[in-house]
Length: 252
Length: 251
Image (spheres, rainbow over the protein chains, first blue to last red):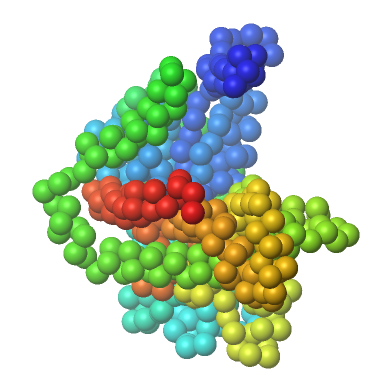
């Protein structure tokens, strides 16, 4: 291989690596960045809360990593660097507490409920959890390890309904998109997801059968910006409550 | 030499990390669980099926690209190779738009023949074929281009018809490329994740192949995930080492 080509490739690799190194503060760059791991059902609400937080704290940038809570927990346990974690259920948060990876006691900042999601116009006339068990319907659920999968299993058990899903998706947004794309006739997601989506509509689940999802939040133990992380958590519990309500969450 | 060692280390170090983390004591027990066996069986079935389809469709395609000239050949060739560079999830979405319930062909297939492809094992095989076939086509085409066509001419001049030339002269001459292409295709199909989970979904026993099983096991049971990964590794290594001589050797 010509020496100049090798030198060029090494230079490109080095520049690429250097670009990912943290940079010091400067007038055009934020003086601090915090990383928030949050359940995917929080994506819309938290993005808004993050933008508002950046306005009230000039020089701070908030980056998000949204995903299934169980996926995020696995990543944090394996050493992913972050400052804040907001989970869609208590058991996943408890895994981090048990592993000693939280800096403080988690606090519940919002509640959510489940809803059946169907295509716009409800062509298959699904009106209850029992309807989901009809053969011939393509139903998708969250995987059992993911919070919405766990909650859905609880609701189905309360309703004494057995559903044979066509697929167990890795996070709630994947269930939503399968229904929105028309690949599935129905799925069980959060009420906030139905509110935020287009091309779908929700079928409410009666309160007696429904499940209340508690969303806890905490600062992570190895957070490099603990004070700022705490400020974000406090913001979620204070000003953020209005934003969360706008997106359909209920207060704890 | 230094660069070569760095390259080798880049591959070997993660594998050593995997071996060191393996819970050897409980590994055997993990392997016996029905979900693991189902995922392994499904992965092998799907990847071998995908490779077979790729060979049946891909070899004629490679032959067409290597031997024929026609208007638009460059464009069609680029399109058939596209899945190689496309992010697999995008491939999965494209398959949904083509073969999903509301898809271009999928809607007619469902209405006329009652054939549903998403969320089925056939769908998983399709997804794997879609992403892996280009590897076979590229390799076989390269082999066909670089072979000495005088043998084919000689056979034809001796009176052999087209099929005889193909079976007795061309294919044996490109056997190393064909085997290499099939192995690459199989390995890619075995490891496919994004297109499978998007198009075929994830259901243990029907569409949950090994990569999907590893991804989900990582969340609930990291030990099982490591053991599953090792099984995949061992199976792949066995095939690659077993075919090494045929792969690298000339016919």
